[in-house]
Structure formats: structure tokens, C-alpha cells
Image (cartoon, one colour):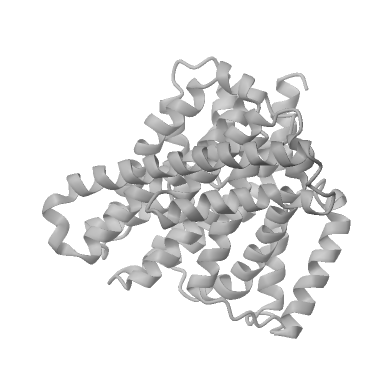
Length: 398
């Protein structure tokens, strides 16, 4: 345990002092994190022996995603979002359902041994994009503001929307007795997850922000403890929503949007420590993924898995995006940029762990495909981020 802690601690130290230089290279943080985990893990030098079980990896991924969603939402420019809301609206209401449908169709063609529900589970598990992996894009001002804010809102809400869809298919696959009432089950889960998530995120943030202001005015918040309110509030929104049966991801994102609106003049000092905490959790998550998952997945790769993984990041993502953005005042290059930057990451990790725990007949194939898609996404989206940001920035005159 102490050997692992030593390695992780020193890696956090080294990356934190070199981050400014490394972020200007084609190698993104997640690429480096996962590679370090793979090289130092059992498949490589075998000096990092992280014993991360499925539930611990799921919890780590969930908390990381919740914190990233909250801080990204709080940093969103609501004025830009108000002017270009049609982009994320179309991506969520048209693009997301089309992505699941197209993913289902491609899955039927590629995986002949999987049942209909198992293919539906795979399509919904890989539909949401990842706010953490897309951070390099949504925080870079060289990218036109309407594209940045559109991608940010899409990634903030689509994983929360996909949760009830995914759970419906998973429940039907595990318990055939509910198959007759699948529509009612699906609608009920969607309403419950989204409704409770919004209520908790907005309610807790309203109360938390009010209390924070009162304490700030009275001088009760010290410089040391000023680093933690946002971390506590974001985790509280996520955990409370999950506890009450809602979507913690929607709670975290909606809470972050409201916090950024209410604290627009003072939010940046409060968000700084939370962003650093989120980056550190992401580092640990991807190192754990590289050490504990990638090595195991490589041995189970097959042509159907590889074909579907590549299709998931290209055809299955880009075609629905282009169709959903028809008629929008965006250049073709902007639409393609949005279509390409749909990275898969933490939400799909969570879904993959849930499939693993469900012990489905085709569960191994599903988990390997999810892991392979995430690995390819880390690599391809990470390597292409800076070059494509530079290109779209030059076209926009930035």
C-alpha cells in the first residue's frame, strides 16, 4: 500500500509542477495518466500494484465526474449559452437519441452473439460524452464560444440523461419479469432521475450559496477553509441525488450552473481549489484505469470489439451530430469539430462497472468494448485536441 502511495504521490507532484509545459504538447493529461498506469502496472514494470476493485473504481470515477461537472458548469458563460442554446438543445434532444439508435444498429451488425438488450446496453453506455476528457476543448478560448459552451452543456447533461435509459435496458436484461412494462419503467426512471437530480442540485445550491454569503460577510470563512466549500457542495449535490434515487450527475451540473450564476463576481477564487481537486482525482482515476483495466482488456481484444470502438468514436457520434445541427449557423468545420469531440470517459467507466457487476451472459464483451472505446478516445481525442483547436481558432480569427 505504501509503495503505491509513494508512486502516486510523487507522480502527482511531478505532473503538478510540469503541467504548464506538458499541456502545450500533443500528449494530454489522460494519455499520460493511463500510460503511466499501464507501464508501472502488472502488464509493465509491475511496481504499481493498485488493488482497485470494480466498486472502488466506479466510486472514484463518479466523484471525479461530479466535481468536474460542477466546476465546468460554474465556469460556463451563460450569456453566450443564452445566445446559442439551440446547439446543445439539438445535440441533446436529437443527436443523443440518434446516437443510441445508430449505436444499436451498428452493434447488431457487428456483434452476432449479443442479444437485443445487450446491444442496447452497449449503445447507451457509450452515448454520453465526457466533460473531464473534453476539458482541454471547453476551456480553451481559441475555440469559438458557442462551440465551447455547447459542448460543455451537452457533456454536462447527456450522462445524466443516459443514466435512466441505461438502467432501463440493464434492468430488463437482468429481470425478464419487467419486460412487459418496459415503456412505463423507462418513463418512470427518466422522470425520477432527472426530476430529483434537478431538485437536489438547485435546492442544495440555493441554500449552500446563501449560507456561504452570510458566513463570508461575517468573516467566518478563513483563507484555509475557503478552498473547500465548492468541493463539499458539489459532492453533496451528487451524493444526495444518488441517495434519493435521482441522477447525481444532473444534480452536480445544474448546481454548478446555478452557483456560477449566483456567485458570478466571486466564483473564480472559490472554484480554483475545486478544479485542482477534480484534476487530481482524474489523474488517480486514469492511472488506476491504466494499471487495473487496460492490461486486462488487451488480452480480450477482437476485431468486432475494435470495429465497434472505432465506429463509436466516428460514425456513431459524427453522423447524429451533423443531422441534429442541420440549419444551425455554424460552418461545416465547426459542426465536424463538435462531432469529433465527443470523448468517452468517466460516465462510460461507471456504466461498464455496472455491467460487470450485473453478470450478464455477454457482459465480458460489453465491458471489453467499453474499455477499448475509452482507451481509443483517450488516445485519439488527446492527440488531436491541440492541432484541431489551433485550426478552428485560425478559421475563427482567434
